[in-house]
Picture 1 (tube, rainbow, N blue to C red):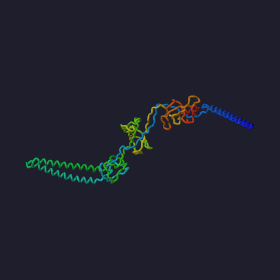
Picture 2 (cartoon, rainbow, N blue to C red):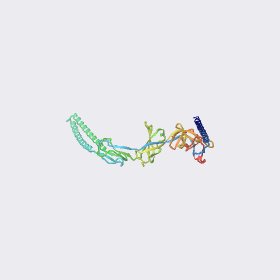
Picture 3 (cartoon, rainbow, N blue to C red):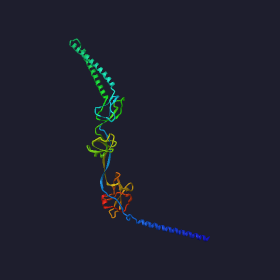
Picture 4 (cartoon, rainbow, N blue to C red):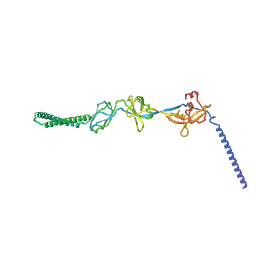
Length: 379
């Protein structure tokens, strides 16, 4: 029993010795590995070749502004009859070109013509009554002069003549009004242009003012733009501008700048008369290029020169003045970017050399080298 305990104690002792020896060896291994890594400071690493640029600080910058608008015809209208009636004929189709005064459509005028005949008969009767009243007056005047008729009778026949005359004038006025309605039953083109819509076919009964056809003029189209208030000064009257319509580019002249500001959008409308209609149509989207000024002080850098920083900021690596050059991180704020270039403000100085690409592979304090003096100057 005693021998077994002694053997067990010796086995445990050997196990403890082995664990201790393993632990010491592991500690030495970790210490030497740490020392080896500690000696690999950024200063001791192989210099990394970087591409650079020169910081150019400026006061203020401009950003492009795209102003959207629509192409419209300077003259566009929906023509309609101003009297109610049945459409008898529509003489044009959509897409037809017409001249001012051309007949576009007609209404059925049978009722109007019947009314004209009725009024013509009434006029003939009124004129006959007037003739009879005039003859009666002449006779009465003769009798009064011979003391064969009273003055009162003369007054009566004079009144009859006036009544007959008024009836004739009234009937003539009714006929003239009817003639105007008959003329209005024919729809004429108000100007030279193109028929762009047809709303009514023959046989339709329309009320006064119901659109029958749509028309646009042959004059050069115009583009209407709602310009923000802070850039309206760039678009003075009679200034030549370039308008982008789809894949086409059209030049034009600013002819109108409306005096009133839109209450909802706070913009001012301008009208650009295009120099030609080729390749554009009313309703097309148009784009006018402008610029907006900003007062911030900073520098333009390529987006590739930026790397993620802290708290939503960005950092830029600049080269120190020493030899060999080392990287220093500068925190900047991006004010504006167009996807390729960024205007930044922060701890950058005029003339400093910055790394313009591959910043995600670099670290502060790292030694870098430049490919050549010529490449440095190129940036």
